Length: 289
Length: 262
Image 1 (spheres, chains in turn blue, orange):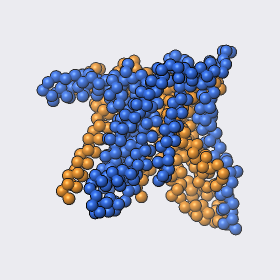
Image 2: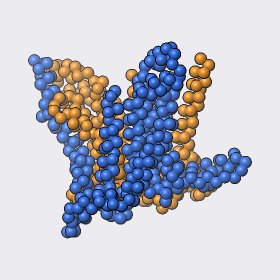
Image 3: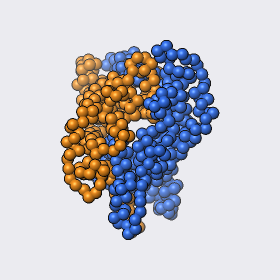
Image 4: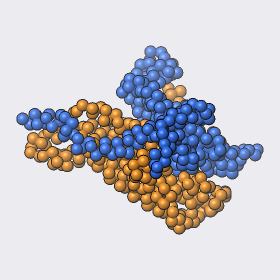
């Protein structure tokens, strides 16, 4: 009887609905309907507000394909995403390895927390803090000139490398986190077995450790690549005039030029690119699930 | 053996370098907020003037209050709604459950630039417009998936037999939830709430598209100030924000293990 009651109450959507509805209704109103509305808008000539004339058009998408500016900017944003992701792998993966396999106990816990802590602090403020380090007469400039016997001018502010540095700083904790989780799950005996069977350190790394931690690497790469391609605040603050990317052009359509339908179309093209990338990453992630 | 030790030493040194990279700009910014020169000139001269003038900046103060209010309301709403949804997803089996769980990922995975501009268009279209209400609507939606994921993770460690035992001892559904389930998942609920607060308090992109000149949050106000030109006041307020959000996450870490260690 009690068993039946328990099982009976655990089946069916009906009893779950009152608990689920508020949260999913909210998500619908604030996320899913807006995304649908944006899709709709991207095919309009103007906003259907206050008696403005509007009709359906493919012109906003045609603008992307006919004007090389937009596709060029999308390419440079993709390149930015790729470069930042690569740097995050190069910098983050070894750190994740040391955390997972070298450090032990409390020091591991404390350092792990220290690495991911900045990630949870305000991104805008951290980007801003680089402005002080990178500008001419800034800290980096002053420090290097104090040490070096000759005079050099470091003025990285408002340049492509500044944007890269800021973004890598923002996103490298993601890579450390995801790689650490998969590296930690690798049984040490697998590594020892490889070594005792005569594999060199390098062989163990390439044939055992990296393949087994691939899901973490791919997850980290996807989590970094996607937001970097859509970034606009970081290039604006650190890139100055060189910081025009696909994201900043979308921002302009909404806050400066007020061509919302074009902005919506550009956003949707970006969303399509993002979805393709996530779809490509999904099989690797599912393999170990 | 010797090479192992050398490699391990190098590894530790590398971690120190990485921590330097992560923390140096933040430390420099904090130091400069106490430096007298408004152009960040060295030598360093101690002052707290910038913090004092912060108090005179009504615009920043107003934006700060907005940020705090929105973050608190977001936390309350998303924690309650999110915990309810997690309970339903944990307790009941029904068709389309996988789909509902998958629906949580678009808000996390889609770049905020896209979500933010979509909200702007939709809220404008249906008459909600921009402003604090719109920002709140958006923040709760962004925080909900995080709360559901974190609370669900905690629920995985909960034995369903406990609920059944309580029910067979005569407790009704409400009593079971409040006296048995909720106390067990409380660390997850608190961690979810802190996540929600952080998501809202640090949110820039979505607030940026939904704010209007009088109704704005602190990060949006800071962005506007940075684009006009650096001021040491922004340093001071940024330092306060970094300290607050880091303290918040340390608190979260106490309730919720990120490391995935058993």
